[in-house]
Length: 371
Ligand SMILES: *Cc1c(COP(=O)(O)O)cnc(C)c1O
Image 1 (cartoon, rainbow, N blue to C red):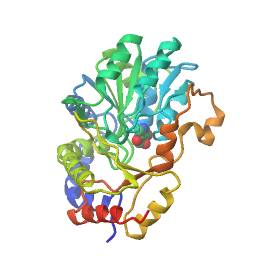
Image 2 (image 1 turned 90 degrees about the vertical axis):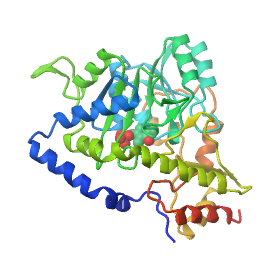
Image 3 (image 1 turned 45 degrees about the vertical axis):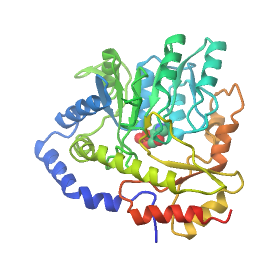
Image 4 (image 1 turned 60 degrees about the vertical axis):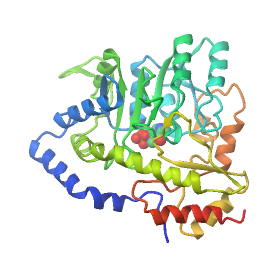
């Protein structure tokens, strides 16, 4: 048996005809950039997300950068963030000329809100946060809202892995002045290429983001800011709205079912399964498990030998990446938990098109590890 970490072939078997119809509709429309498809997709995503405005952009990285810029983050701004994420989270911050301030993560791999509070209390120069709902596990919205209110913070939530996750019955990504998400093909809300979105309740922020994505235009041929070429195109928007959004709730439910089977079935003294928060419906973008530092390579080898594809999210703490030697950053404390995730995290296959037999095979293979 071979269990793939992602399986676009099976996804295409399900959606191919609907995707072809979306292509036909866009082709017939004669409008390929910033037309009706983008507008309708934005309206629908904003509604599902419980936010007033959605602005489609070219990627999740751009959504973070444009969101930060729309909130006034620029050169020298200190931005609290996590050392354990896709590098893109930090890349968006340093592309603003801002300075990432890294704090450790909690037992689930999400940014440690207590450490955020310690930094905010002692550092009045730090008032911007980019937390990440890593693996699709929503961070505590009450904790985030408390920091935002007490310290008057600007927050850009990185929801690239948590599209339509919920916590406390409400959509994840409803606290920050901005939520940013990605439509990279492997994400839960994945397109057939790149894309992303800025979500907000603030009309001025939405207007700013809309202008920035389109060369900084505020009206045709009128440029009030040096913007970007960062538009979500009509084809991706049509695909997302007509093909993915109608299936996303079922796909996420299927992911939750598989995660439940993994959590119930995996019984191994050398393998820890970080539990999701009790009041959450995670998006289960990934299913992370932890093995002891020093045993990861042997475990990954065991899985691969038995046909189980897996990932590692993420093997290197962001501040330890070579590229970070080129820019300023700070780390007020050590981050041992993030380092432990980097040393011991392995992501099991988790996508909506896994078969029950494959799910059982993954559980059996993990439990059979002689490590
Ligand atoms: C994928 C991802 C991004 C970047 O999104 P792109 O669309 O690839 O630019 C940012 N943050 C996190 C947490 C991600 O998983």
